[in-house]
Amino acid sequence: MDPLVLIAMYNVGDLVGRYVPLINCLKLESRKGLLIAILRRFLLIPAFYFTAKYGDQGWMILLTSFLGLSNGHLAICVFSAAPKGYKAPEQNALGNLLVIFLVGGIFTGVSLDWLWIIGNGSF
Image (cartoon, rainbow, N blue to C red; front, side, top):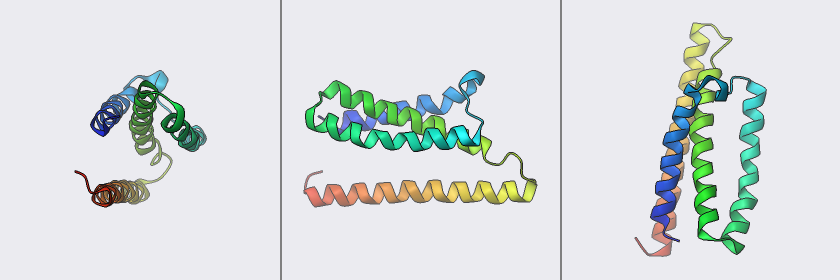
């Protein structure tokens, strides 16, 4: 499987997922519902494992696309639902914390990806 295809499908799914909350019936606004949806994504770990071991390329592309779609959707829902119920200074602080953790996660992911690529010895 070409990693470029998986990266492209993840990014396309992420882009589409960021616009899905514009449809009001698909927007998650409940904090409990968001937490459950985020925790359910951990079920993708064994799905990826078994797909990599026994599955076909199509299933891996489907899983990667779903991961990107859920990532974009849940990120936007969390960013829009988390500050509700707080006053302006707390909303500002919460928004800053969310952005710090988002950027920190992106930086960590990119750093680990580069270490993985360097460790494999192939670009």
